[in-house]
Length: 404
Ligand code: CTP
Image (tube, rainbow, N blue to C red; front, side, top):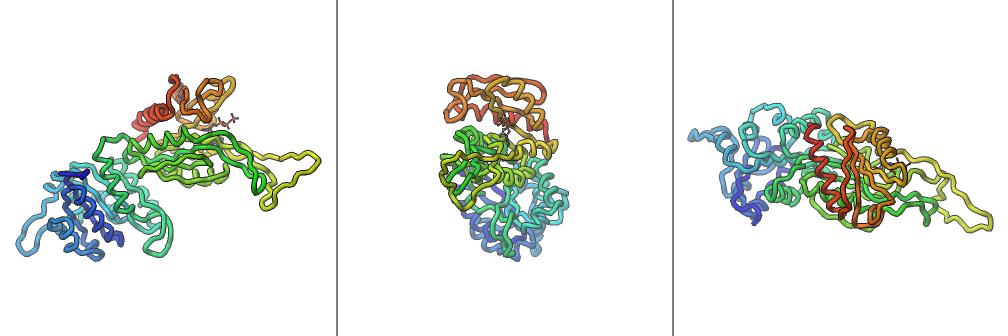
């Protein structure tokens, strides 16, 4: 029982995902939590207070007053009682009211009175989710320190498919448990991490690639997630597995596929860490279907440049976002790294040298120097990549404090 004795207020608003709130209460109670359910008037169209009362073992709070005896549901007392206020599902309307403080129901008054952390699990149609006002309201809630449990992508109740599905009760529970298990510095933050090599196709069986193992990028994704951040890891072909409730992995092959994913994901994040060893060129004339046959003549490939993904993200980075790049150099290391830092509009560049023993491709260890856009340089000793990842995440955490 990982939530023994925790007081959790569960706010339910009027979305079809309200039916998932029943499972959520069951899971919370099973983990030992005491749950007080607050329902908005609209939510009662989707699931009944009787169901929620039976599952939580407490009468549901919904109106400011109980009509027949005048009992007052004190939002102030509930707000003080709670260790966590979880709004799941949170509709666009509830999110808007939470952002602007429109207190026209008991749930919103409780949000405004609560002294405890607030978690919000949005649930809505993809276009509603994307709507600029909704995005702005979510940003506002984040700026209040509230934790947004980003909705997933998939089939929606409307029959459309896209981003807007409330996270599954099991996912929400694992976030609640991990929230209580240790204070995390990057809760409420989200990151994009790129990792591994890219493969550029020559024909159906051949490609050009490089020897990047992906270990550094995977270690950074893991370390960010362990600090509570939501991470989307876009990885080229590697022999690594990762499993963490806060990490979503997207597998790609070519630089162009990686670029397309990064451009989609980056705008919704607090930052990106570009660990991938992106192949700078691709084959001009790919033989898509036919394997290229051996001939007695030589064979040459024409290569054309790929975009620099880090630079493209650097050009759209907002002042609240952070961008970290890596540099792999064999000569004039510091000068080259500084140039890349400026050219790509990075906050930090992590320099690793191929000349350092035990560092870089394929090794479990790495030796880095981190150059910052403010001119500082930190040199670290040779360490396990997991430890190196923690050093980088510590720098990111510190820098993000000045970004909000
Ligand atoms: N990078 C990228 N897209 C590319 C090339 C590089 O996003 N097409 C990113 C890498 O992930 C890394 C940083 O840019 O964070 C620097 O990569 P590196 O290969 O060292 O530098 P390049 O800019 O490609 O320069 P060069 O290969 O000429 O040293």
